[in-house]
Image (cartoon, rainbow, N blue to C red; front, side, top):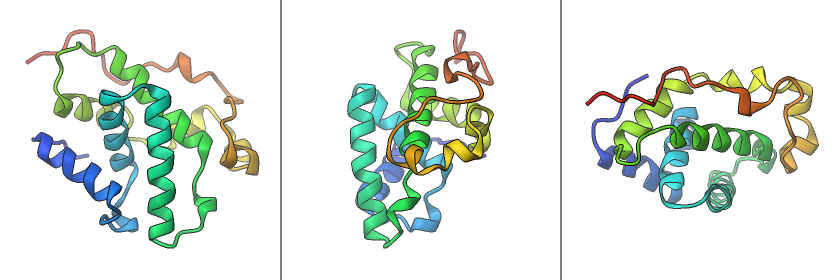
Length: 152
């Protein structure tokens, strides 16, 4: 997975998503994580989730994607994971470094299936509202790398 070199690259991902100018086929897991970092840097977890939910629904509507594609549980899960990882990083870390470390740690979009059975994760209930994991608690997750000592 390629990494970001500049904040402008991150801003372009966020802007393309928010303005719906990014093609639906081009907005991948990596981009979701990038937007999550950008939102969580500026807003609380709850505010970030509200903003993401609104933007995702606008995005799927704009691209004429069935709203059934949106899954509240997956969205909340990833925001919780990203927020937890970000809290372990030094306060002065740049957005570029935060994004790159989050992408490195959470590059596997199927990680969510370590916490949820497919039946629960893709259930009607999980699509509409957050449901707790049925395999293991997300709070038990350890990032793939340590954030406590970031080298410059």
